[in-house]
Image (cartoon, rainbow, N blue to C red; front, side, top):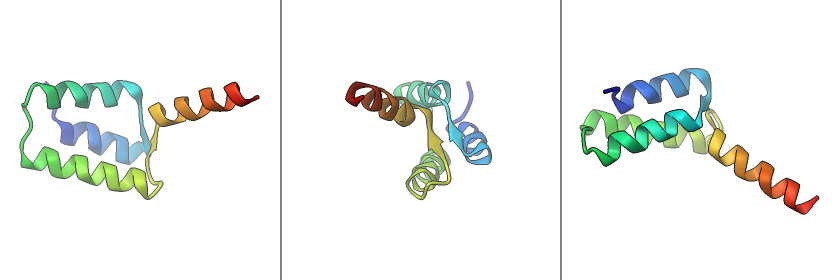
Amino acid sequence: MVQIREVVKQAIAAGYLSLEAEHEMQQIFSSAKCDLEDLNAFMSLQLAAMAGRVRQESLESIKMSNFHEKN
């Protein structure tokens, strides 16, 4: 199984977190197969997203659906 830190590394490098990668991280967290390094990596991803260095596909799709509902 892929480790969260690997998914995070790819997302930060690409500047984009896909729905697939987000789902993959949810699966890893739900299986409780993560360690402190994974949690630290996840926190780094959250900080990068909050700083605008990583875009999240899930948030972009929500924003787009809200935009289309208003127009």
